[in-house]
Image (cartoon, protein in one colour):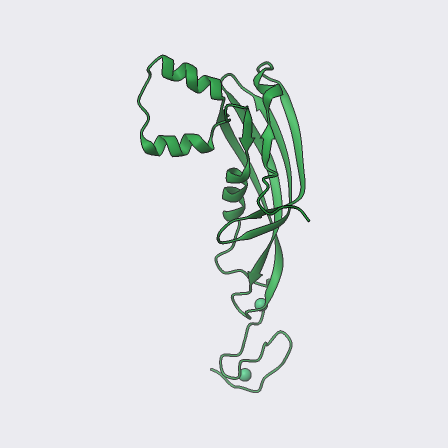
Length: 171
Ligand SMILES: [Zn+2]
Ligand SMILES: [Zn+2]
């Protein structure tokens, strides 16, 4: 069993940071789980290409995961696969130091929160959990369905009309 608190999305990008503009690196993440307060993403498979730009590293990738949904029509619980594409740009840690030496601007607290997420840390590691969670959340349906043509539940006799017929005549 893997430890629930371990972060498998924390990647070392030192080779790109010390490399040259245009360098690339490919990472594949397989069958990991991501626990958030509202949702558990299981069997995550992600394919990410990192590209070294001048002051940043660009991550372009695709991700899929399994989530538990409850059908909005018939209340059946089931597993659904969601897929998403993402693209994000991350500032290098050293660039931040250079920037502040030049005294460009004072960062506001909201900038800081934003930059925390779009930033490599001082060991040149990047935590992909944020982008994974954001892009997966954006794919979750507000009213999920077990199947496209789910017949739902009879509001009169409460039978699941996918499996049973009822004689209620509701106009
Ligand atoms: Zn349903
Ligand atoms: Zn009925």
